[in-house]
Amino acid sequence: MGALVRDSCVVVPPYTRAKGRIVVSKGGGRFGRHGRLGLRFDSLEVRPGRWAAISGVLDTLEYAKPGTLTDSGLVSSGKTSVVGVGKRLVPAGVAAAVDLAAAPVALLGGYALVRRGPPVRIIAGEIGGIRLTEPLDLVDDGRCEPVSAHRELADLPALPQFVPRTENRAGTVLGDPFNVLLLGTASAVDSAFARAGWVRAQKPSVLAVTKEVTAAIASRPAISAPVSTQYFESRPQDLAYVLPGPNARIRHHIRIWLLDSLSLVWIGAANKDIGVIFKPWEPQATHRIDSHIDRERDRIVHDLEASGCADLVDYTTLPGAVTQARNTSGQKIVSDGRTAVVRLRPCGPSPVAVP
Image (tube, rainbow, N blue to C red; front, top):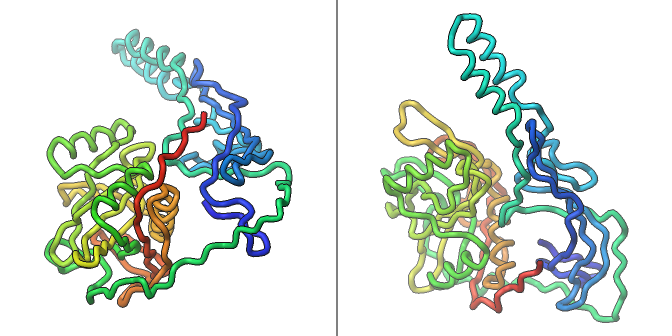
């Protein structure tokens, strides 16, 4: 996501393509054996059309559980286990002891014993890191592409006075801090997020919420599930985008409001859902968020820049910005207090797919 710089020259630009090969590919096997996937990377596009040889393996993966990614770059869907011995067959013995229908229970336990384990899944938009196993050796062609400086904030239009946080419907409780400021038209916002792989969140409805709850119970992704409504100056969000995770409980998302219709300034609050909080006294479940919201801010900046539809102007601190707070559901929020200023522009050519 970042440029490799040496002596103020960009050696490898950001958002380059890497090629590699699959060295291990095993799906889930009988007796609960989990899937395995091994990737090795052998070339990197250091300039458009110019590839350099590398030797690297997968080092990090956003949704990989602890212990499932080895030093050799092999990712597993979990530890190999024989499903059913301790959990599914014991009930059959208990059933026989109390003279219940033991045969059907034992049959179900035997099915659990031989069923296949889960495969490995790497979903679109999942962030991973490559670790080089040999030094990167690049031929010096004598050219120097200097590090591009961000534009001065003098380009930023004058902003109206506002509290840089969302609020509940009554306006009595402050919520998420605004951490992304977008400059451009509504169509430019939509095009940039679409090119980056994000999808527009659905409007809340009985059907949409039912689908989300079903996906959460079944541990499936909810592609365009609605986000809860938050308010800014008594207005619900104008736009909302999500990047689905491995299931409905985990996802990236941002809520966006139009701040200035003349200057086409949009303000957004971005954070990442990492779980669900159920409260018996509340009719609707609340997502648990990653308290370090700066990670989601920077993720969105990287995605929009990589889409070719936006440029980071700079980071600024809005009047009234906070570094620690609680949102409308009482969850802790930690930030450096800065807001990313992103200028949208017409999208370039569509990225070329590489097998």
